[in-house]
Length: 427
Image (cartoon, rainbow, N blue to C red; front, side):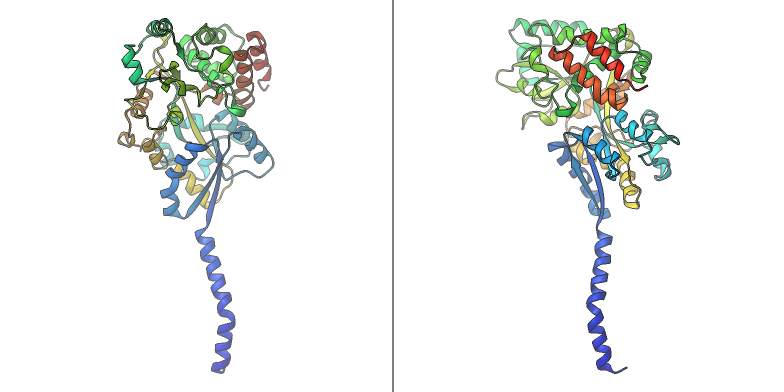
């Protein structure tokens, strides 16, 4: 072949070769894993920061899209055959619905389960095991944990007022009376949360179930074997409403609870002077506090005391379970990462998250409050997962939220609300 012809051929094919090579490199570098969940605003920023190093190291782009209407939107996507690769479920009961329909990948068949099992205590593994059409599967891995049995307060003002931290229920009642006598409302409350309005009320009911009846009854209630319209559940709800519905006990009164955003509710504690003094919520609530507050100086928390001593010191916990809906190598790699403490390390350092992983370190916690939350969970005499999160989605993320909101707002009686929740339980 003549040199001129050869050169011509090379010139002709070189652009195609470069294009093909560039396309190959581009495809290699662009490994996208889509993910959705309820993280928005500050939580979404902290999530992105927590996975940034992994993305840089692996070349995998975790494209997270958060939504305040997550519970409704995820059902549309999954049932429509267009699920994201990974979904974060704050309600395991909602995930269980998709598992039961065969939509979720069994992680025990795609991950290194020796690593997974060695990095969680058994209770987290048990709660991640759910029933599919083909039998029980490992439906997800736990990533972020919240301790919920916490009462937050404005430490600087609290100390200046001479109030004392209650260690028993009787001492809490004494504190409430002292605050009322000083002309203020003890509690800041709000249960508005978009499509999820009502969930803070269900948390309170769960706290009181753990404090007024046995763990066995709590477990039966979560499983649907103990009706909402039962003496045990009614007693727990009464323990809540004895506080919420009493004159002066809640800032704004009963009528304001259902329309006050759960994230805005605690802010009144930090006004000058405070308009309320106490707020029960999980450790994530610090994300919604006014900026520039110093943990342990400007705010702190105490454990919500036991009501009946025979039930010890229970702690209500919650967490985010990440499930896999599409099986590709890069999705497996992301899920294996989520089963490690490294995946939550930066969020732990930033505050507002507790790691459930055994390979996480206490020195990751950069404030005393988060470290104290971790210690509360470790030192509990018993721990139970958020009940509404474990119930079937149509109850835990549906009628329980809705009917408790109706009861708190006064549009339904307790009898009507409990009957509606029991009727909604899937048969």
